Image (cartoon, rainbow, N blue to C red; front, side, top):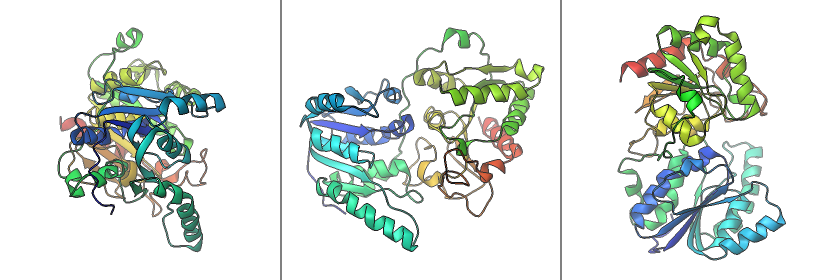
Amino acid sequence: MTAFSALKPKKVLFIATRQIGDVLVTTPLISQARELWPDAEFHFLGYRGRLEMLKGNPDIAQTIETSDRPKLKEYLSLFFRLFQRYDLAVVTQPSDRAYFYGLVAAHQRVGVLGGHPQGLTEQDKAKKSKSDKQNAWKKAISLHTVDVDYFAQHVITEKLRLLEIFYRNPLELFKKPVSVTAPAGDPITPSIAAQLHSPYVVVHPGPLTAYKRWPLAYWQSLLTWIVKQDWQVVLSASPAKQDLQLNKDILSLLDEETRKHVVDTAGLLTIPQAGTLIRGAIAYVGVDTSITHLAAACNTPTIALFGPTPPTNFGPWPNGFIGEQPYQLKARSQTVGNVTILQGPGECVPCRKAGCEDRASSNSECLDQLAPDQVIAALQSAINKQ
């Protein structure tokens, strides 16, 4: 444990150069930093198009966008824009690039370190030795670092622990409720708003990668059941082609009468608009993806379908939870606050691999065996509790 630091920064840069979900899970960290440094100015650096999760965040004075694959000209422009402008950089991703930005931007740094394989095989030990060498320079330039633990440590706990060095008693970080700050809402696109009627359930079938998908026929069963309860279904999707096609494929399986009660948002909503949509829902059902984290942050009853991903690492955080770990590593169903996480069967669950074939296009047997009846039961229970 690094010794207590009395650093009181005036300007702080938070760095999250990954997906929109990775931006959202930094918000408890930002809120806690604001309590530590009420007069400091906070800026946030992330990839272009990924910072909508921070819309209206009262603690962020400025967002700075960069390409996920910048060319030399953009690197130079960013270098001169950032160079030593900050007292502290909080590096929330373990990538070399994120640390480079932190080194350029600030006099001091704290950061997350990755590359720590789980297990005790010789191959794992070799990988750990290699990652330790790669991480040596990051430790050398940082006041404090936190190791990623993909099985035992929740990602929000990981981020909050970046502030340990600034507390005499680091356990104080987890003795009060921790919440994720959802982005401020925007009015829903009129063409979609005109189709909505209460009560409705938001359903988000599309993950970023195929191995987190739930079978098409299961979505058909779920949507048919929801409509039979006299509830409307609102299908959520990103603008990505695979998400739009997935929703079309699901709709094609529905009978005509059921289809009349389903609204396809067809990727037309921004993140702030999606937040508004979800806040108005009686419940949300989705796969392991950023919109499911948004649903939990909006305090809507959230049913999350998890396959290879350990919920102990990246389960949607139940707002107001007190402590470091809301979830068990493995449970067919577990509910904490407004979030229910469902996992399929299998001794290998969760494996943290990219599906059974460990590649992005793979299927995951644990999700194939997560029956619609289990999801329906969880959804009904969540709605009945309201």
